[in-house]
Amino acid sequence: MPKLQSLLRLALILLILAALAYAGWHFTRPQPPEVELATVARGTVESTVVNTRAGTIKACRRAKLAPVSGGQIVKLWVKEGERVKAGQPLLELWNRDLAAQRELASRQLTTSEQRHREACIMADTARRDAERTEQLAAKGFVSPQRGEDARAEARARQANCNALAADVKRAQAQIRVTQAGIERTTLHAPFAGIVAKVTGEVGEYATPSPPGIPTPPAVDLIDDSCLYVSAPMDEVDAPRLKPGQPARITLDALPGQSFSGRVRRIAPYVTEVEKQARTVDVEVDFNTPPKQILLVGYSADVEAIIERRDNVLRVPTQAIQQNGSVLVLGANNTLETRTLKAGLANWAYTEVLDGLAAGDRVLLAFDDENVKAGVKVRPRQGNKAAP
Image (cartoon, rainbow, N blue to C red):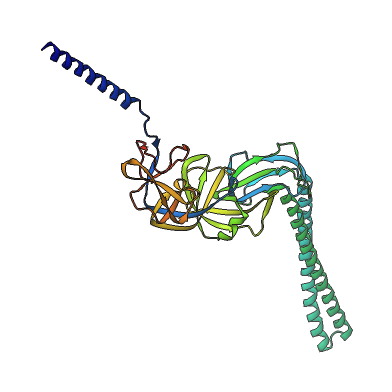
């Protein structure tokens, strides 16, 4: 009996040791690597072209205004950030000399009109006298020479009337000349917009920009009611671009938002910024005016949509290896290699023509070299189907 109890005690001890050894092995054994997976599903795939460098938001109309002639600023009617209407005066230069010339021309016009009126009255009187003299000459009361003299006097008076009419027109033209000179000293808004910058103050001297010498404009006027994006595209993508193609616009200033647009213009030439960096400028309009206030000069990115396919089987592009295959989660959580036949593709998604089915889960990251076909893995919690 004591011997039996000893054997039972020994068996119990061995059983406890075996359980402890198994628990130690179970909890200390290497765990399968945790991986990030994506579920193959249906969705939209687009073939797109993106800009190589940041684009810029520009205004459809922007004028850097300067007076036609130089002069001292005597009136400055606007401030930076102020909105103006078309034709509204912005600034005025000193023009007292031109105003005096206009007043002198106005007085000369008045004098010329009075002289013209007087000459025409005398010409009309001379014409009536000539008619009466001709009637008297026809009846023999006066000599025929007297009638001819009267007709000559009437013609001379009428010629003087016509000459003074030309003087009136010359005086009117002189007023227009002086008025044009005055208008050259006043800067008006060519369109409605917002004043971006004013260079100069009252009392300072403003000059027009000489040819070949850039001079800061007196007033920088922007029509921010119409905006578009100008972005450089790589020259190899230029043949795929056409006016009217849909596009998406994103802004660094508004992360997480995109705006629909349409290609409005493709530059007819290639711009060489640096060696081996040749681009084509593309202009894209907003389909609808953004509700947010966008500033001219914001950096923007353009994604021109070349082709679009809806409700197709797609896989994240980053899941595709260089040889065109993908790693699929198979039975018992073991990775399997699948050869993929791809269709339309972009940086985000690739269309699946053959090799995968909806619901397959593919490996996204290839950072761990130990994660390969035949390796058992643990799906990371929270993996979802691609949106």
